[in-house]
Length: 273
Figure 1 (cartoon, helix red, strand yellow):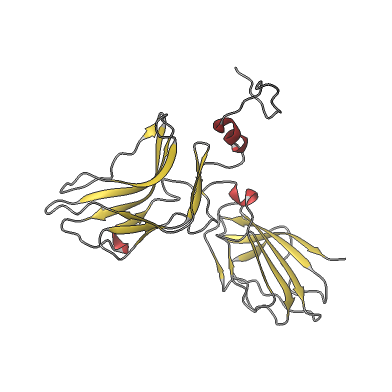
Figure 2 (cartoon, helix red, strand yellow; figure 1 turned 180 degrees about the horizontal axis):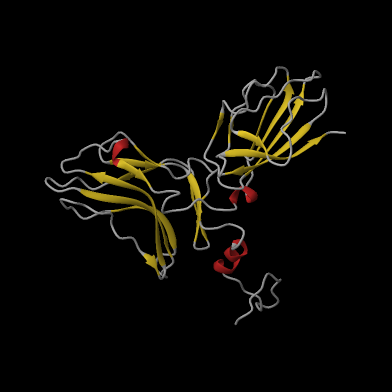
């Protein structure tokens, strides 16, 4: 067993660290995967232009390296075969070989066949490929459509577990009867001057939350107590859901998502004193 450690100031070059040692700080904090709440999450979409697809913006962490795509990234697939079909796969590739040392988003082109199968990806040694989507290219295809694209994120390639605790996103509004809370991109939501009753927190609640995902909602009215209706996506989970604000007092409500009940469970309610 070898004990490693870091970081200490170097004296005459006696403490030298490489990129992998720096990246290892995040091991156990961020699991490999796509950051669900960053950009478009590397979703692969049609570009409505011939054999092109676009990979949405996003951030990922694989093999102690990070990949950032800050705009839609266009990829052009090879022309379709005149007779046979094929399946191409869009991947994030981590290549640690000495001559490359880079990450990329690329197309792995499949083999034309009457009964095509997905191409075999590399996942060993210094090269690892993580699938984002499969593209079915029938013979003579000239335009990639949405129906040709099969998502593989959260199926074969995971979302990065733990990222909601490391990179938090929040939004603030003054007032709404049906607050729009997208839990794919938000961990916290604040209402600062509620002037109407909330008729439903469920109506505009969107996202695909994971088990034990956290959500914090902070509410303050405009000086008059307002009713709070939560709807079918929320439930008491040891703590009752509040049904009204207290005039001029900030209320903070904590939730954990339960995939068994498919609801946000209320686990804490704190009222300003």
